[in-house]
Image (cartoon, rainbow, N blue to C red; front, side, top):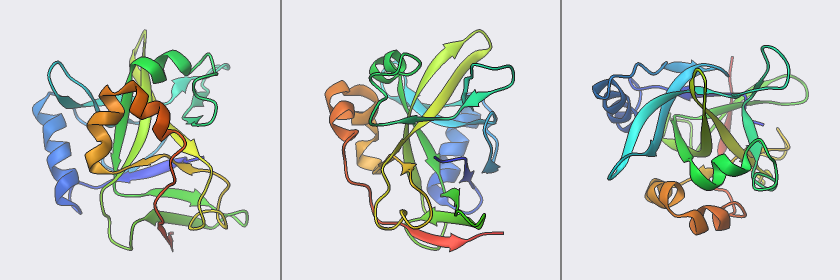
Length: 188
């Protein structure tokens, strides 16, 4: 599970450009630590190229006030809540890292290294009565993650973003990809 992530335009030039694209398109993505239900910057399909918009993080759940924020890559095509969105409306979360908590409740920030590098997380979205909502995809953890948590985000490289969004077969095949090794830093 991925329950929070960072979006820091002041700490990362690439994220700063993505933030500015969202602003130029008339959106105001939340910055800093992103929590479920926040409106966050999302890369999605535009008319002729990808675009940066904002979406609320989390599909409405089964109970009042509940949000479903993650979908398992192993079952996303079988689950009624996610299958149609995955097949037709994939998106990407640009982040500067994400958080997981160990069993002893210690918060860890994950990224490629100790700096806030750009880390892209695969997702999909659906339009509800109050606008678009997105979920990010998770997968089995690799060695860099397994001691902290039993799930990790499905991570894309920058050069895979367009294929994830536009190429359905690429997206289906990517669900079983090995994830990159990450660094965990204890966070306050």
